[in-house]
Amino acid sequence: MSTGSAENRIKWPSGWIVNGLSLTDSETRPMPSSTAEKSRKPSRLPIIIGALIILAGVIYTGGWYYLANQLESRVATNIAAFKQQGIDATCENARASGYPLRVGLDCSKVGWVDQAKNISITAGSFRSAAQVYDPLKIVSSVEGPAAVDVPGAPPLDVKWEHLATSVRLDKPLPKQLSIEGSNVMVNERGNVSNPVPLAVMQSGKLEFNTAQPQMDIALSFDKLKIADNIVLDRPLPELTGAADVQLANGFALLAKPEHDLSVLRGQTGTLRKVELSFEDGSGIAISGPFSVADDGRISGDFKVTMRNPEGVAKVMQGIFPEAGNTISTVVQAMAFVPKDASGAPTLPITVKNGKMSVGFIGIGRLPAL
Image (cartoon, rainbow, N blue to C red; front, side, top):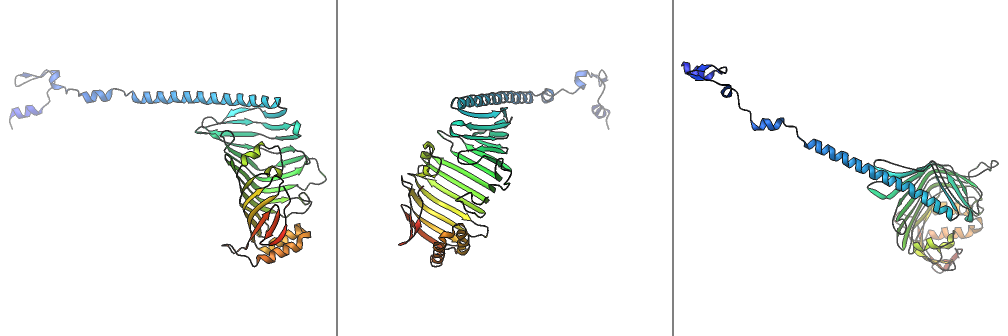
């Protein structure tokens, strides 16, 4: 092996002379690459992203607290406006809450007192909230018990395990409204001599959906027991029921001063389904279009379906013993009418100005609303 080739493979220290050539530092040291220099420079992108995130958070927080302040101010303004109308509305210790993903209102106690109408309702703490990405839908809950005073009823105490509402705002009125509760108990306030509740209900829900001028109303309840002789001065069994009703001009109800069933006068609509069930599983379901005249007389074409007609007859005769013969006649007729898909007999009933008939056979008269 030649000496030259060996020398070529040796990395000589700087300043040595090899084959008459001087090796300087610049010749022996590797040249730095431009890529390595760039990699050693710190990137500014993470800093920029972090700064933008912080800025967005500051802007969002400022906006949230601005809305919260507006909400608290609006509540105070509305309460003052109600007082000018003679209504004492209260929302004690009102404060905005829900940051960061919600905005809502909390009150330690709520109340509504309308002295002109002798209506007073007070309850416990109240909480409401709306998601920041869906501010028009507001959910709320209220703690019991509630003290209720209304005309025509004794002072009431109402207790519940859960009571919540949901509303979707729209103009001129909310588009949707629902109220649901569980384990509700109603007692007469101060009546220690009769501790039996006036009414108890396992669960219930009431919903309103509006598409002006139409209004849809849905009601459901489970295991409702009303104390004897409270309604129609008669004993009532435990009831489970549901109703789905469409009113063609439901918006008109909101302008009427009436607070009873007479508010339905002049209305037309459809009973999609009104169902009532008893403890033994028997029950009645009614459906069909209807109208209410200005004098409160009802007209319509209905289909009445009975599950276990004998069980229904037993319950109804217990409530209306004076109509026992009529009830027995109707039940006997159910054996000869068509049946639905489940095998339950379905009876067509026509009502004209309150007079009920099956075909040409009159079976009674409905009271005016």
